[in-house]
Length: 289
Image (cartoon, rainbow, N blue to C red; front, side):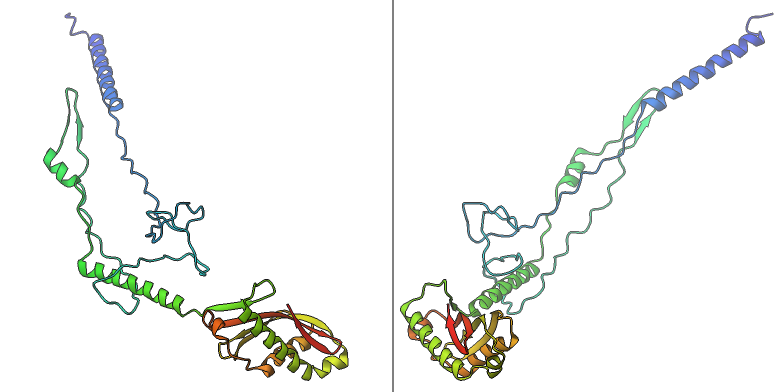
């Protein structure tokens, strides 16, 4: 009998071929790996504006990013965009909401990644033409149409103009308190005002307060217009008795109108606020700083 006709030897050869085939397939599977493309994290958004004034010292509590340091000011309670005092080729008397210009259409879906093929004898990668890849990599300019961009600038200029007009309409307020250093004209006007208040106040002293023997001090603000008329009366610190608080405000109204502002005071103020302490004591009214 021939050796290759032996059934035991044939089984050994078959088993050896199976083992070799499994080893080759395992080497190919374990030797080639695929990794998923990692996307770069999205950069955080920045709130950027244009600074109008340059300051050397930076503001540690800045609300916006700009090309230079600028310290905020004004009387607004919230942080607002200062805008930009620039001229526009379009006249926009009314403020319009700024409409975002449509961006460029999305790029065509990229072709799948180059196919990676592997055989027992070779590995090859399908690559594109270098010139075609460079053309795709160049960024396409995204600009808003000229008409829409000019309309946005005109709207921003109109908003800034409205803010400037609002500030210009604010009255110039002069306040006289115990802590204020007064000029001669202010002191003379305040003395005349105080004399009139005490005269009218003692003539109309509240009868109910006399009967109930109510005494107290209160802090009162009186706002006057240039012609001497009363714009506002407000209790800043109560005496503890509504009767005395109401009597003080009533005495101010009975004493009005007061004398017009002197020329020196009128030149620098559109409104005068007088803050005084009113004293109801021993059936008499007096006003002090």
